[in-house]
Length: 218
Ligand SMILES: C[S@@+](CC[C@H](N)C(=O)[O-])C[C@H]1O[C@@H](n2cnc3c(N)ncnc32)[C@H](O)[C@@H]1O
Image (cartoon, helix red, strand yellow):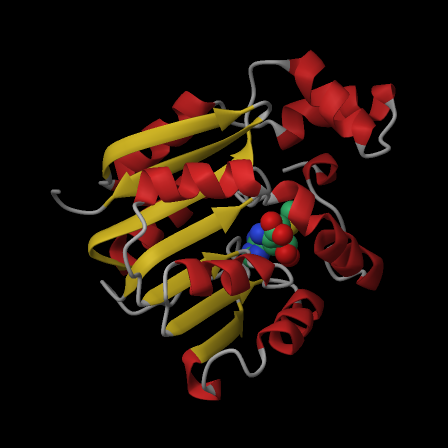
């Protein structure tokens, strides 16, 4: 995969940038879509794959009344920030943060142990997203969900306009479009279906989409 789709996530400035842009990326429209697609009931164990600085886990733990959170990421710098931000929000033993590179290692989660798995702005960055989604399926408990949130292809101009609002030049946004909008909403739906998820539903928000799949039958 080209580096145009990803930043240097070990750079402390990128850690800060993800923290400061969190509210804008995970605002009320995102949470409305998430809760509509996953329902609001308790999700005891939540795993965030590519958790970055851990802010999704903090919000998700209160919205879904989680008792245990797991954050996996290749960047130790991101996990250090996540550890600082999550400290004290649950007993230490119930906050699990692990360095895993999804391009070279398996997820290593206990089969059928996760009630809500999530990946935000990750699948366009990794070499083999279909393989990761299959591993996520194995780790999700029966009647658990996997939610994917990412940029989606289909409207380059809307992507360019979106990125320009956060300071990117027109030329740079056009260069990055095929890398950051690597999948369409249908591609992501198909990936979840091929892994075994059912009742796949999506909510498209400008150039981003949330796609949710259920494990097992309703
Ligand atoms: C765009 S950031 C998103 C972080 C977080 N999900 C958020 O939305 O704030 C992508 C994250 O995925 C992680 N990542 C990228 N490629 C990875 C890989 N191959 N294995 C594990 N983590 C990876 C990066 O370290 C980074 O924290």
